[in-house]
Amino acid sequence: MKTELTDSPEIAAQFIRAGGIVAFPTETVYGLGADVFNEAAVGKIFRAKRRPADNPLIAHIGDLAQIARLTPGVPRQARLFIEAFFPGPLTLVLTRAANVPLVAAAGLDTIGVRMPRSNLANAFLRACGTPVVAPSANLSGKPSPTTWQAVREDLDGSIDCILQGEATEIGLESTVVDCTGSVPVVLRAGAVSIESLKDVVPDTRVFQLVDEEVSRSPGMRHKHYAPNAAVVLVDSPSKIIETARAAFIGLARLHASLDRSLVCESVEDYARNLFAFFRDCDNAGVRTIYCQTVAETGLGAALMDRLRRAAAR
Ligand code: TXA
Ligand code: MG
Image (tube, rainbow, N blue to C red):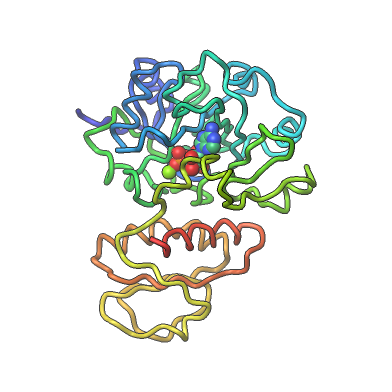
């Protein structure tokens, strides 16, 4: 299959309406989308990404009115989050409407819903005229793509179209909050911080891995965010042992001489650059990536979550 490259949201949306799959930018990472109501198209996403069928997809909307097509009812706490954070980097897990195909939800009775705030994503989703389910547009197990070039590296020839936008603004995937229980539960940290969620719903708690909950977010069982290189977390670059084929990313200046290093200006800058740095290191044959740890507040909690997953591989 030839993968069409375009910067036109209308052209990209035509592929969705014709039952195809399209990669598109959001403020978090690039997604790989299909019409949520077209089962055959949704199936193509799982095949192109080589994604396990038990990992559910997020439905992206361009218009708040589309929520009613995805869920039979929005609970009060979810409504508060929608008012405070939509459009934005937040996914709410809600009860799935009966007409949403099982394949999109990986067999669950819930569906993740998110309204991106990036202008290009919004123009694309509006032109599609239907909610678009989309996981990150990487091959399963690879770091999420933050540029259209990274999407092409993973998926050229196996998807219909790439909507070309800028490098993504945030660089880490959305915060995922399960709103189907009595209190909201954060399943994945992201740019909408735990502190800001608690400001809106003080009872919000963070998912802790205990046995009864293991099946709550199937994606958590799967490997994520991992480069091929080994990731080693260090609290200071002074701890780094100089070796061949090593790299560093963090906030403090590095004195060791390594093949590659990226000293970031802020936690935001670090988050924005992390996944592209992982990909660059893999392409350059780096074997060990030293990543500096950061304080776990605000976006720092999401960044540390991704760093730990990459290191735990
Ligand atoms: O920022 C993002 O969320 C990006 C952009 C494209 O929107 N998307 C993204 O999708 O990261 P994905 O599929 O790579 O990650 C979605 C995560 C997975 O861990 C998945 O298991 C979880 O959200 N998830 C999705 N639907 C769920 C549901 N109904 N219940 C529990 N977890 C769900
Ligand atoms: Mg993903």
